[in-house]
Image 1 (tube, rainbow, N blue to C red):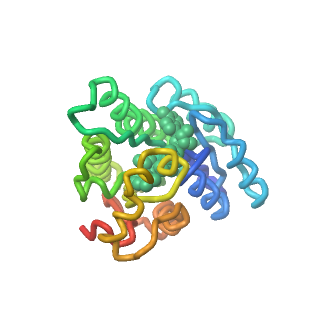
Image 2: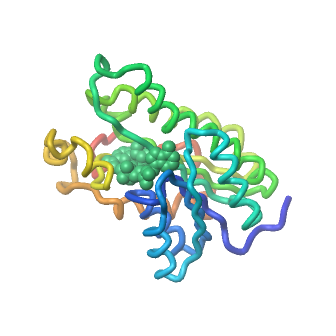
Length: 250
Ligand code: NAD
């Protein structure tokens, strides 16, 4: 077993914006060194973390590309000696009926949301096993419970995440590694604001089913990420934590 690092190193994918940016800032405030991998530049996240007195490294990374993931995780390992926490948050959620979903779109959603889980976990797991400690958290979605129209490929990809987490937990628990998923309902982020969600009236429609009668914000997910990446969560693994204002109540 390797000597444990005083400060944990947390990789956050998709940490340049939205929920991932919130996760990066929260983990930095929790005292972790944060490494953001995103297609987009993470300057804004860097500024927020530096202002909060935290440490951040970021590098461009396409989570759907095994080579890009290996390069990014290699850079983080060269710099800090390893990865203790993986928060795989990058994801895409195009809305279209199954009839209108072509093979290229299906493949892109699977590449970014699910195949990426394979690439990232493969890249960080050996180091976590050697260290005898690790936390992996992957973003799922309450759409898995809801089975909403227009999101067949997305829901299938997030169902894959939930299955992955359940099964891998059984293999890595012996090494002090936990793996869980967080399933938000609808959260106001750059991605959902730019998408058709507003036009389709989804922010309003969802409130009729949600127990908490307001739209979710990235801040609503921060307690969950802080807990699941902590020592306190050592006995929780293989789970998908719904943080959805009581939308799915599964
Ligand atoms: P967002 O679109 O606001 O931000 C996503 C970030 O991921 C961006 O910075 C983007 O550049 C990055 N990204 C996209 N593709 C990438 C790739 N191939 N490689 C690296 N980075 C990439 O998204 P968000 O709304 O904050 O959602 C974050 C996660 O939460 C996603 O996995 C999403 O499926 C999940 N989720 C979101 C909601 C919601 O309502 N916002 C609900 C349930 C689940």
